[in-house]
Length: 296
Image 1 (cartoon, rainbow, N blue to C red):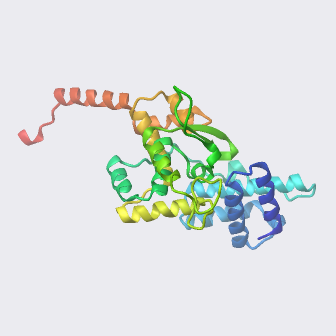
Image 2: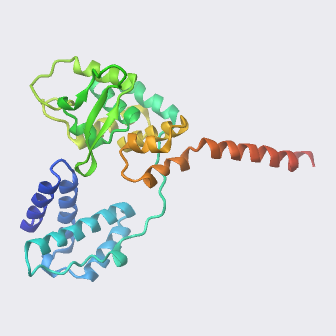
Image 3: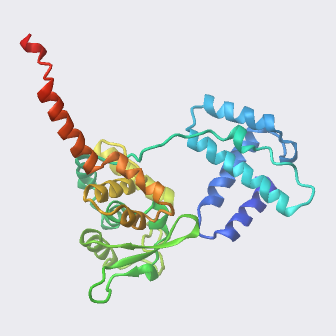
């Protein structure tokens, strides 16, 4: 790996020690410079154009391409911070970033959830994936969960809760309903092989990685004959809250969204009022204009 990338990775880690951004950005940069075969000082705007074309031909998702462009732009910003004679930033937002339209969250249908959880029998894994489905935890928040973050015996009138270290190093609180609380308590009753602050350990007695958690879900999906992701469990939590007519501001807090606009997209996939209005309208339209072709 280039020494400039190593320096950039350390710089990101100092700014956000708990974030996964240093890992992803350094990987994206290594991929780009390996493909290009040039040092950072010789990269031009046209090289970024060519990289975007290459990525599109390879079939990469627009969001993936934009993340790699963000990594490159952040990397060159870092170089200007470190040196007065740093190369000019070759990534131009208006020229290079791909505009993304509104993308609706992909949730999991309830019958598929039943199939999935029917094969998740281990107490550790059942607790992990119920925290995503019933509390809306991100996979990184599950991975970062430590024993000191658990508040399972609250004062009278309060719910059990988790103190989460989330996206971008931010912190938030997640409440525990009876189902994930019971699953978590079952897991915590099993004595660990080693003393560790992490709630979820691998077979070597170390904190599970994000990749390790994702692989566990992949194995269960294969057994259940379906394909879902960890983040889809979180999306399904959002849908379930919407269907239960929870206030949108409460859903925002429960999902840990910084902007209400991010939360509002869940109304597009399951808005009870819109569904009721549509059903009423279609019944009235069908009564006035039945279009009974079979009777003609």
